[in-house]
Image: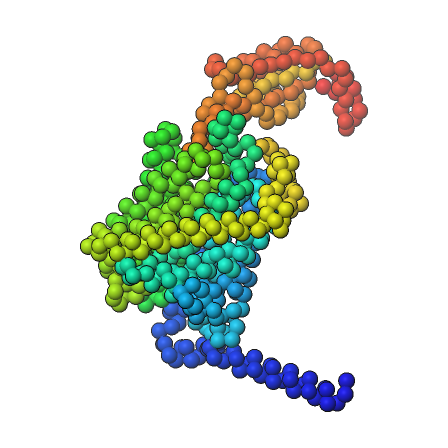
Length: 458
Length: 112
């Protein structure tokens, strides 16, 4: 290379590097400026991060629940799906998802800045919010693995994980949390969803429904007369452990959504979260006892989760008694939901749609009914959120119903498109019948979950 | 030589083993099996759907004894495994052609 060319190359490189370096300073990646501007920031940062870590542990909870409710020959596959949707989700949400969700708004439809957490996005506060939001995105993604369990191709699941974290979740999330059109509806104070009954759970649950519908039921799940035949989970204690962990993680999910430790409402949120879980567990327990004369653990566990899902939207805006009522209703709804899916021959191995879909939508709607006007939009300042039962009229309720309908339709259509594309790319989304009978673990992963044990194959 | 095979209720295993040892039986093999005879199963519930279980857990005991010990062995098992309720199980007696002790190579009665 000639001297001139060498010099040209070196100077261009130097300019490029300094431009990139300069670019990173528009935000505050060091944190010193942010601390000076807000001396109260440290406790907020610690709070949000701690809560994010709690929500992360919900991945473990979901892995346990789903694996416990499915057969031993697929246990590795369930673990891999729950592991990889967080892996793929983290990367997709870093590259694209967060920007679409929280970037500078365009026409109320999607965000446009913050790609790859680079440039102006390289900022301690942005990174803080990203850390909290990514575990929420991963929660929405991992809900689906239960509904499609035991028969989806792993490659299809990897593909789906990217799409949900990059597009489906962030865009609806933008509409509600990113300053998009649903938050600006001219009813009540616009659609609200405190910690994500809709944004996270109804989105995930509805995608799970579509996946279950498009895959079809597992072999042997319904006999030739359409009668449901249970496929027993291989480890009920593991499923129960998973629910305990989810309940624990939810104490980060809901109270953490204040994004600030200075909002003392976090105590109310925590109490509401707990009470709804308890109420959901109780009503499901009693419903099943009335129906079968047994204290059924499977549906009681689902009832606890249903209560947690349902309170996720209203948790900051209601009083304790309302949390109990919302939870009690959720526990009944999840049992009815499971019965409905069986009637429709939709095989949802862990009840992902009844737990997260149906109760996510119920949670959204309950805000419009039970919000009591004592707290605002993530702030103590006015306007406060107030629902029908407290003289707020039907305004908020209308906004909530609209957001619920939009949530369901958006998730349903996006899921249908995603799995349809996957059908083409991967030549079908379901494993072959021989593979399904042999077990996904050996076929897709080459590793049995319990090689020391002779598993009674079913 | 005879092989005595008995399918018994699992919780009866300790009683049967104890009785056989006291009767002079020097060894046995057990397997965990499932089965049903005229005993009805029971109904279970999973996530809101009822289903019927026919196969119930049982223990199969296999003992190889000399001809002389066979009927005593059968009596011993029968008495120890008895509860009087449906599902107590069954005992089978089969002829054995050859027995070999692996460690020493002994055959026949010496290997039992």
